[in-house]
Amino acid sequence: MSTTFDKYCYVTVRHLPPFFEYSTDITYSKTERINRVDDIEHPAIRNAMKMLDMHELRLTYDADLPARSGLGTSSSFAVGMLNAFYALKGKYADKKKLADEAIYLERVLCKEAGGWQDQIAAAYGGLNRINFTADGYEVLPIIISPERREQLNNNLMMFFTGFTRFSSDVQKATASHSEDKLSRLREMYGLVGEAEKILTDRKADIDDFGRLLDYTWRLKRGTSRVVSTESIDSLYERGLSAGALGGKLLGAGGGGFLLFYVRPENQNSVRQALNGLLEIPFRFENGGSRVIHYSPEQYEQRIKQ
Image 1: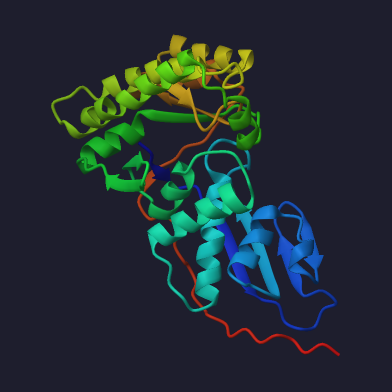
Image 2 (image 1 turned 60 degrees about the vertical axis):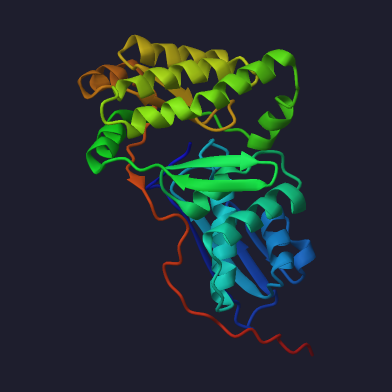
């Protein structure tokens, strides 16, 4: 199960006018100005430009949230960049095409360890159950009433731990296939249906979703010693002691954001207990990756003297 919410990454792409000594200008946390695509240091940008045959670009990237924080920022960037590339060419890419190509870009071309769920979530948007099989995946929207959805949103609190890490590093460190780990993963997998039922059954106590978050987080934490740290465990227990019913560290682990399920009457107590952490309010959203401004440009290779 996954959902998207109202924190975004923005990718702006246009062809670079031929007035500069360099042919491509890329700005993210650093600036690259190069003449050959092969010289681009950023692996996702380099491989995406080669994959879609993009040349002579000005690309800028900025985001509402920090990188390496467990919220799928790298995959959101990959999906958004591919969407922008297709728009610049005057072409349309549907949600599945964007998700599939972002997965291929990150997992095959860039050889980054990790799963597929972030790319799918960024492309499709909304609250979904994603079923993975040997043949691929299917995305099934989870239908709940607006009132129940609002209640769930209002009962969730997110805090930044201050720690960031590369998801691929955590994935590599948790790549063991011990029987204990597999047993925990199987149990977590089996609880997806229970979590979905809590949300979709109006007669179910929605607070049970928070309690289930706590149970599944403890299962996940037991899959590897690098999933959590003593500092994160301490913060998590402080949240529970202040009134949270459950929660989890978002993403692969090791740092990033802590999500708590807290009834409204206990939320101030949780804020006070975690007063050293930055709280990030958020609202669910359904859009997924989308083109905000659409101006296709005809690419004409500059004449070399």
